[in-house]
Length: 347
Ligand SMILES: C[S@@+](CC[C@H](N)C(=O)[O-])C[C@H]1O[C@@H](n2cnc3c(N)ncnc32)[C@H](O)[C@@H]1O
Image 1 (cartoon, rainbow, N blue to C red):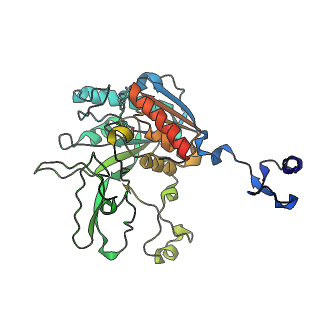
Image 2 (cartoon, helix red, strand yellow):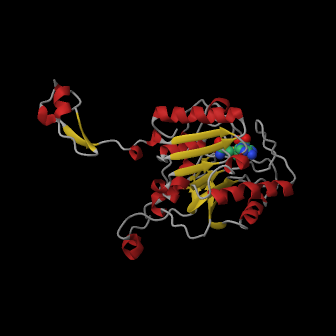
Image 3 (cartoon, helix red, strand yellow):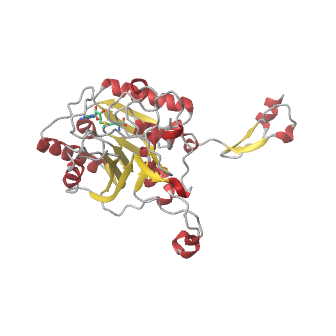
């Protein structure tokens, strides 16, 4: 009976009546809610994931067909991937970087963004900058973002929220190693605390490496960003009235230092079976900074285990294209996308 009445209700375009939770109400208990649209459902992303060499695969994509590229190539630091050999001579490595970057330039739209994550090593400190010098022949470096993986902060002032276990190693669940692949050194002196994870470098010469770069390239250097999508509140609220550009809002640009810790995991093999990943959140921030609603088509030519794809799904990107040469990583990427879809979240 209720269902019949439900069918007879007038339906406005884009809106639909819903039954109340207990399904016993009278006619007046129906509510009109906006019908779910594709951008309301983050798992509507269409995926095109292939086990292919990315240069060859990109050469088949149309010119100016991609709004956003978020990727992290192998760094030529001798990392032990499943299939790929990460040790080439420098010149041929940089030549190869030029080859894939040229394809990215070709497929990127004129107002598109290309976020390139690169790390260095004490043995190879200039590598990120050499790659940038290679790419600047045909792309413009619009922003340099520092991805901070771990940081020590004096919390004496009581201004740091250290309650989240991902952020504060001090409150990780007792009796279990929250991140077996990274040693965490937690020093607490007064209010000094270390947040996030890092791999210690055992050398009297070199500092622990707690950051990587995210280079933001565009074709023109003039692509407008959605800076407030990652905005943070003003510490000093008097700034809201002082600066006209705030338009009265308590939101300012976060800047180019992004603290994005790796998620705490219990088993590397099961939860992160890849030697060089970035967190889903890092890719999400790139999408949001470019403007999630502007991204119809996103590409990651070096997909790995699919963190960029999970981010795309979480942000409601319409179409995601990913290439990876390693079968096992590609299978894991697909598993993680399905898993994230099941959870209805990005994790
Ligand atoms: C730094 S990892 C990317 C990790 C990824 N961002 C993630 O979070 O899972 C680089 C990946 O590129 C893959 N790769 C290397 N050469 C490739 C090529 N020519 N085409 C496609 N993928 C390649 C490697 O197998 C590796 O998984």
